[in-house]
Image (tube, rainbow, N blue to C red):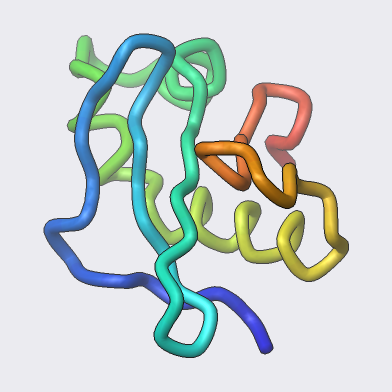
Length: 90
């Protein structure tokens, strides 16, 4: 089963990046996109804060997290379970 967005409002800024929640079936899966990855995505855009960058690229970031989860490239018992790094960006 693949990951889907848990809720539209299921994200928060925290030290190290933006945490967002996805779900597998009805089980929440905490994810994080690093600050470095966010600012790499935002290169060339007008100055934006981390939440604005996350929302602008949310679908792409969720797709990356879902691919990592499907490939079992995540921490089974870590929190967050899936981390999107700048090296994961297409």
